[in-house]
Amino acid sequence: MALMEKMKEYLEKSVEASKDAFSKAGDAVQDFGDKSVLKIEIKQINSRLNREYRSLGTQIYQLYSENHETEIAFSDARVSGILAEIGRLQEEISRRETVLNGSGQKSPDSPEKE
Image (cartoon, rainbow, N blue to C red; front, top):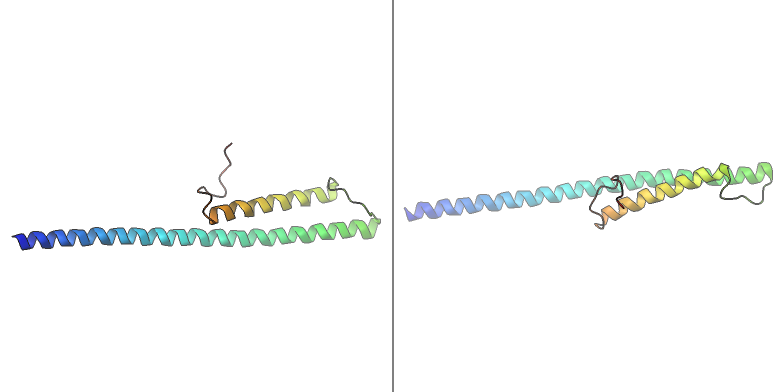
């Protein structure tokens, strides 16, 4: 009877160890997947950011070449919207990088609490 009890105990411990290992593996896969999604999102936002930089350069060039404006204010309506979007995109990238680097535990899309 002692042999059967030892076998049963051994099998139970093996099952628990397997459950624990599978749980840890599942968590690792989930973490890898979450990080991959964040990296893809960062690349997509960077692409949009680069488009905004090009748009800003184009707008400034047009103001200079077509209107011969040598001074352009950042508050100028023709560039302020582009500048605001650049700032917003940079913030989005920063939030996602914070989460990716482990400094933030919440979703990058969750509202900030103050």
